[in-house]
Image (cartoon, rainbow, N blue to C red; front, side, top):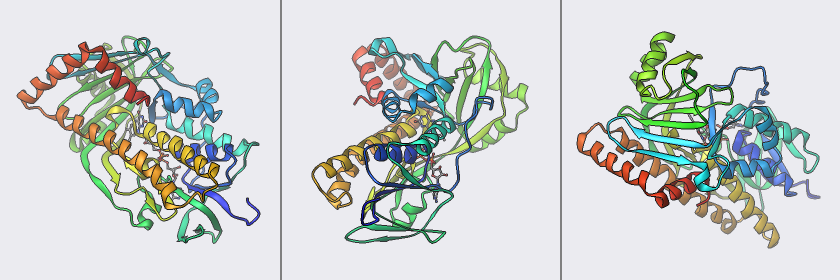
Length: 397
Ligand SMILES: Cc1cc2nc3c(=O)[nH]c(=O)nc-3n(C[C@H](O)[C@H](O)[C@H](O)COP(=O)(O)OP(=O)(O)OC[C@H]3O[C@@H](n4cnc5c(N)ncnc54)[C@H](O)[C@@H]3O)c2cc1C
């Protein structure tokens, strides 16, 4: 804490986004407090692979590496993928991405959410370089925003005063609601059914995605040879699939996946997540900013939600460092607006792009399917276009 007892930044929420941001800012020498409602359950190697996994892009890995947590994540359990196949159930054409074509060792890594959060949490606790003041369990009861600083009043009465407050408490952000920031978007009326499955043939370090009229089906390669599936389905279909017995589930899944990896020979329990598009109409209110799912919730078809959130972290870190370098107050409008300008346009473009893909690929109309087939075939043949798509997914553009 500074001599006046004031912090630089209060981060609310210690998911991957809030945890990474608090750690990054502390490493940069900022005075940081982190407020988290529930202590994350520690990741253990003997635990079954958590059902919530994410595909992390190379730039997300670079950030976690820079924070000193990637090595422990990689040593624990990650599934790298070097290839990606995307195809359409109703039209010809197929897109294939190969990491070697883009000069990368991998296109991405399949990692349990819980593992990322857990390793960040461990680093935050063990950090000798720059301490983060942890308030867990803690929640914000009130925010007093003023010209000279912002005060977060926690439910236990603790008062934290800082230059900036960052809301990173996920899709249901109560700070965003408190700030009166509305969001645009809609419910997809779909749920993503997730499970881990064993397949007759090996996944070959490949991420697979088949677009079907009801929603996309992804098979993501896990470190132990199984695949994690994300099967987006209309609400009623998802409820039906969740209720199937194991044999019927495996048979339907194999069929929905075109038996690309042969029969489904094993499966874990299943869970489902509602799918929504939510885009905060502003990222800044006074000295408060939004980051991660608190600012944007996107369809998981491109596996980008956490990657976008970690790009928010990298951007906010750069903006705050620059402001400090210029001797500027960290929480003034022109500083925070720079972050908002950069990230809101990028996140909105990505979210609207995924939304358009979901609509176009969700259509069963024959002319639309024919156009999709032609587009996929064309993209599959054009190396520069494939390169551009791969660059966007990897955070290089
Ligand atoms: C089916 C599915 C598949 C996905 N696949 C991918 C993928 O392949 N790649 C990818 O990049 N993304 C993917 N995502 C998206 C990704 O999971 C999210 O974007 C990411 O987890 C958001 O991280 P976050 O830190 O912003 O929020 P969260 O992970 O929601 O973390 C929020 C934190 O804030 C805490 N909190 C909540 N409320 C409060 C409060 N009031 N006070 C204090 N603390 C609070 C919570 O306990 C939690 O620790 C997927 C999502 C779904 C649903």
